[in-house]
Image (cartoon, rainbow, N blue to C red; front, side, top):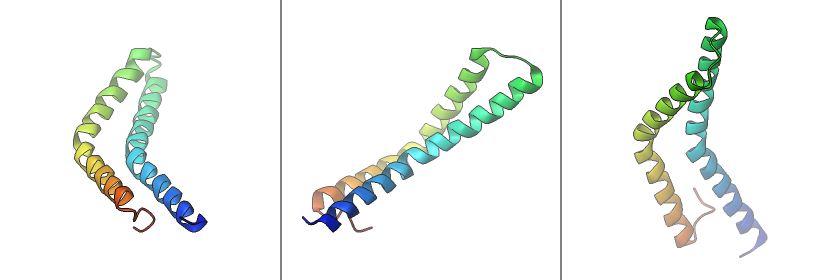
Length: 88
């Protein structure tokens, strides 16, 4: 295992982390911004008003994204155990 292979493995791992965590974080960000704008417009500043929509949207998105996320993780794990982690 040389230095280039280690760099390729780390790069592949970081890309995989972004692909798995990115959609969930992006959905949470958009939901938070929309909720914040609605709270600013209506001048309702209650913590439950911002928490409940984020929770519902994230749970709903996880239901739809979970098969794709699991598939990505399984492919990554298989590549890692086969030793071909650096190649996409």
